[in-house]
Amino acid sequence: MEWASLIGYAAACLTTLSFLPQAIKVIATRNTQGISGLMYIMFVCGLVMWLIYGVMIEDTAVSMANFMTLVFAMPILIIKFRRG
Image (tube, rainbow, N blue to C red; front, side):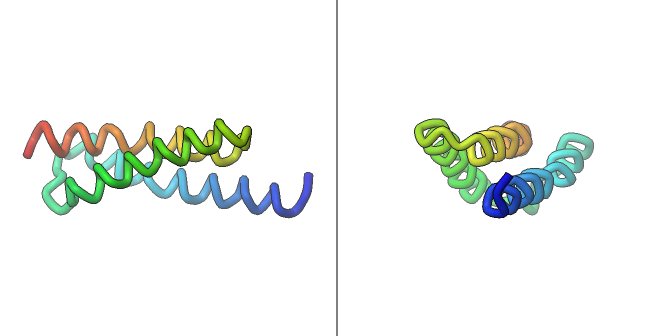
């Protein structure tokens, strides 16, 4: 594997996993008071676009990282708008 690919996969893992603690905390506490709803809407839209882009260029690192981050971000967004 090339260095560029290794760096891409490492970056994908780190940025994706960085959302896991927040997702766990929000799911456990249902507290989203300090989270901007607009920011999360924009973030999730960006993730969807990055996912589409990754699929279109057939880049597994980009596709999987954004899919997994979307999986972690969606519960936060859903809880944010259900609880106000």
